[in-house]
Length: 371
Image 1: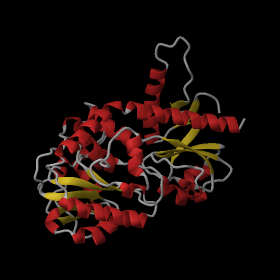
Image 2: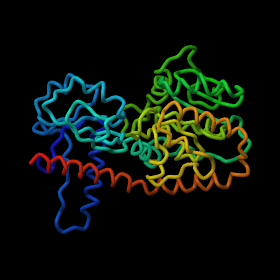
Image 3: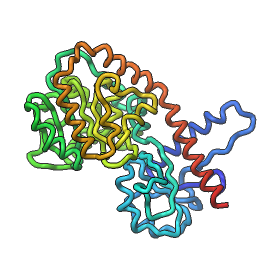
Image 4: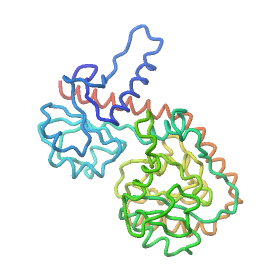
C-alpha cells in the first residue's frame, strides 16, 4: 500500500474521507514541506474498493487483496454474522463507529482485518446542528430546567432488542402510566405524546420501521439536498422538556465495545439529564471524551457491571430511586453539567483528530507487519 491509498468509496466512507481531507490540509497548514495524507478518495478504477458491510456478494466477487468495509452506521453487533461468507484470502479495513479491543477473545472475527474507528454518528450530529446549510441548524435544541415536569422520564427507540423489551416488560410496569413517556417499535406507552411529537399518530401493533418511515415521509422534501434530513437527526426537545430525564436505550447492551449513537449525543447536546442502558463502561468512555455524565449527582456504578442482566436490574433500581430525587435542590448541579457539555461540543475537533491519527497509526501498523 502506497500513500495515498486510492479508494473507491461508499456513501458514508466518502463523507468521512472527505472530512479527512480537511483534517489533512489543516495538519499541513503553514508547513513548507507537505506531509503525506493517507487517503485519496473518490472514483479510482485502480484503487481499493469500499463496500457497505451488508453487500456480501460484491465483497466476495471483488478481486482485490485488500477491501475496505463501510460499517460506519453500525457497530460490532452486525459484523460476526455478516463476515462469515467473506473470502479468507483478503485483508479487510473495517471503518466503524464502534470501537472494540481486537485482541479480546470475545471480539474475534474469522477474517484478517484492521479496525479503523471513526465516530461517524458524532460527526453527523455536529454537522446537523452547526451547519447553516442544515434545516435543523435553526431548531431549538436546549433543554429547559423549569420544574416541575410532567413525567419522570422519556425513552425513544424504534428497533426491537432484548434490553429495550426489558424496559417495556420489567421497568415501566413499576411506574404509574402518568409518570413516563415511551416510544418503542411504533407504539406509545404512558402519557400521550401526540401534541409534542413530530409523529402525529402511532401504530396499533409493533412495527420497527414505523417511526423511520414516518420520519422520512416528513422530511422527504429534503431529498437530494446537500444535507438531507433523517429521523435520527431530529431533536425531540418537546418530549425532553416534559421529562426530568431521558432513559437512553442504546443500540447495544451486551459486551464491552463502545458504540455511541444519536441516542446518547442528543441528550448530551440538549442538556437533559440521562440514565443510560448500554455496554459495560459506556459512560466512562463518554467521560473520557471530555463530556460529563451524572456520577457526581447520583449513583452510576451500574455502568461498570459486567453482566448485562445485572446491569439492567441496577438501572431499574436507579430509575425507581429517582422518583424521590430532589430535582429543585440539585438543579444547579444539573445545569452545570449541561453547560460543561455544551462547551465541550466546541472542542470535538480533538475527538475527530484523535480518530484520524488512530486510523493512520493502524494503517502504519499493518504496513510494518506486512513489508
